[in-house]
Length: 428
Image 1 (cartoon, helix red, strand yellow):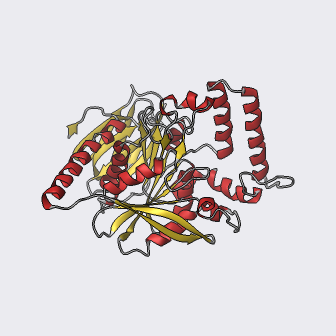
Image 2 (spheres, one colour):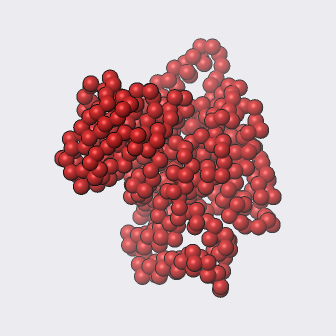
Image 3 (tube, one colour):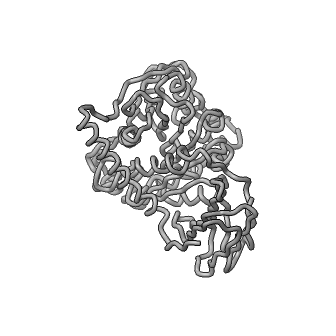
């Protein structure tokens, strides 16, 4: 049995980018010696969805493949393949992003290129109103939000794509969309939530309106009124009382009912997908605060992974630089390679295969299992590892937790046969 010092869950995973940086430098040196280059290529592509010829790109890694592939799904609004956003000077931008005023950020472009540099083909696409400015088809939930379904179908037609390793990653609102798509398919191997919100759309919109007004010297009363109007609209939609309700942001109230049924159930959808899932939150995110990450960690039960990334904002950039840092791409790659795709023996065991008692507990937590385990790890709701211990092989252990604050924790158990399970425990 080997004791390990307490270590931050975040710091542990942020150590890995240095390894990837060294590997990339070695690959570049080898390329120079052999006289060829190893750089990802961005290629224009198109595919049909909802009667529109959707325009996009694939960031393709070097080599003939087949490559594992990631479809990036953007957040709310009219977004192009890069999620290009110009932070023009105004009262709110000056207040919320003082170090980025006048800059243009490209969250999905930067992230896609970072992931393709590490061996993943990454598909990014323009929203339907950008691909087809004169779109005449129905503005339905399927046509507007589920373009990624057709993107996955397109990837499966290409010989340079490993169709056994298809991954969905959604940014902001897109994090909800990927959970919907994953539940409708049987060919997705993992899903990633990047700054996704658990709080329903109308509630988080109201919170954002009021917080921005309060923080940046706006009209708080007007913001509160506008926020309440959004709440009232969506409450009528939930009750399917569509009488007199106009379209909202181009969609009919009936289509918004389809949307909120999915959005309100997003935590359940991640569990129902029964896939490995990574949830990423960002310390400086004003739009989707880190409390949303903690809500996901508290409400999901599928043994998912949760990382709170220091310093980054909702656009995935540091406060004073408009580019997505390599460390974020490396963190995702590390999770995909080491925790999931590179480990074919990983299986999710039946929940509570081990005996955990008492749960809830006040001091010591006991773990007992007929199947020997090699690792126990206890993580708090902030994603920090408060206990970690490895074993040659053990069947029982007790964790002294009297000093741990009251709250919900995630106990991860790795068994000697390579399988894992994660159990939610409560410290009183």
